[in-house]
Length: 121
Image (cartoon, rainbow, N blue to C red):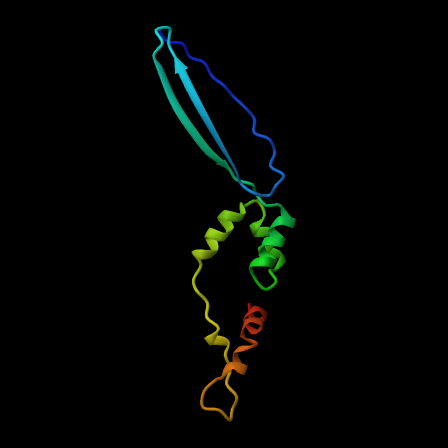
């Protein structure tokens, strides 16, 4: 004899901007007292809207473009960060320019490399 029952629920809308972790414990008993217990856990990822994407991208870099903000919209912050780690590494050395009267670049030459890199991309 088999009894099939279902349970459904709706998780509340996330307002915190953070992913929410939900944990459930389900215990099933039969008429003889035998029990089985199972625990469940899942993460409800909060997808960024335009404002949240803009904020994260401004905190993570040097002024994102509007198209970069739109591309991050609808993605969770965690997924966006993980995707950034998968991108190829960029180096400031390519943007380091030496003064004509020096044999090699010094500290002063490195100061503007981040802004130069941002302007060229």
